[in-house]
Image (cartoon, rainbow over all chains, first blue to last red; front, side):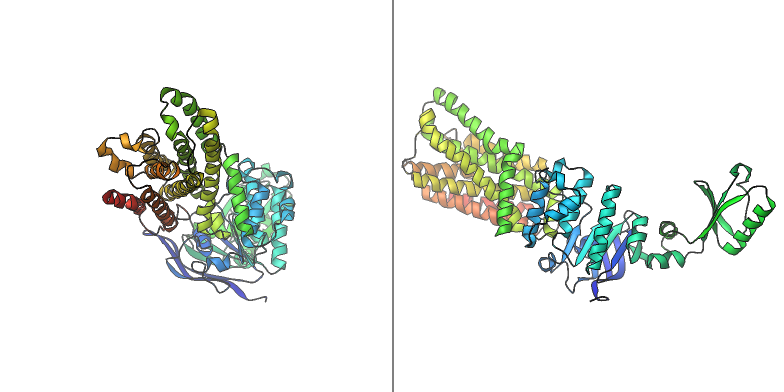
Length: 306
Length: 269
């Protein structure tokens, strides 16, 4: 049922000794939604996922997947949830084909050789796990995680180490699963991936949720900056030290002068005035909201304050 | 059932595919057996009497005490059990299936030794083959359980070497394999009785060869099986899924409880 809450995290806390890794976070995921969990290393993403997977016990709060508690109801959940861990392995001497057969047997489903072929492992069916490249190992882990057609898929940095083709294949597969009603919880460092794939994201900063919303909401609200990019015909004539009004930060990227403005109307009109009076010709002028990556950096550099 | 068979089939094949396991399951025990058959019988013809059970026990110990624990520890350290857990592989399968396949490999090597020692090296054949097989099964089960327990309590592969050698070396020296129990100095016997090989050799001598023993061979068989059962239960109880998140149910020192049946037997004898 669309809109149904399938995963619920309430006031979740996790302590390692005296270190508070996750400090009372709340979020929920709906059926058929791709929810992104973003954060720098050590922000608490993997800890949160591992508690949802039943690999660690929460120190406080509650976690619920399809109405079940991962710490208590692991057996009931293993056929409903697919997991691709960031740090997990298979035995070195297990072949790709054996791994698929082995895990499918424990899930009680027929083996899915088609997934191995789809993810580019068709030529490596008899290769032992230790002989596979890192990228192929991750593809195998992905194939296994979706082989039993889970209702919820938890992916921890799924595209790390993948080439462009595999990444695109994974994204297509995620969209297919989503269309089929599977909810996906995606932890990633790849902001372009998060912006493209997720319906909603939560940004974790030092164990707390600093911002949450759709990628569009996060990039269009909250930030006090607008990005103004300028490309000109003769950059050598341009004084890059020149100060435009309402600009708080300036940088050069590729062939563009990039200004972060608190008042884009004022900044743009001054830039246009400058080019009107100058012998230099304006080739391109872009006024954009921040990308998710820039907004993410803004939030994380701010220590979580919006 | 399909999951069990798949898991069993994979673990059995890995006992041959993995070079270290192939060495410990077959090459090392059978090579040592051939060497002892050629050299030791020439130096000490009396060795022929105990050669078959001694070499069978050696093969069992090589597979179970030296071969089994390392992959258990390595798998835990590599996060393989985490993958298993999220895919619904039960802890009991993680322990019992490698243990069973190791026991099967040990029994194959044992059968080769038992069937060839008489024709090749003039080793004494058992008077009662059924009892010989039963004691071999009991010894394989006990050593397999001890191997699993060592794999469970060892933090890393260095600890495995320590714990395994703590049983393997004394078993070779005072466990009745090379030197019969009745000619060991009196003060060493209680220590010797703590070892599974001593109990197994007593059971072989009394029950499979119908020869006189230092103490009741049935008691030895009971002690052997009780130690094996205790080791198996302790291995399951102390099992932990991963090292990053060790919420072990008890102290590894609980593993010392495995000595309880042998200690009790020392007082009874």
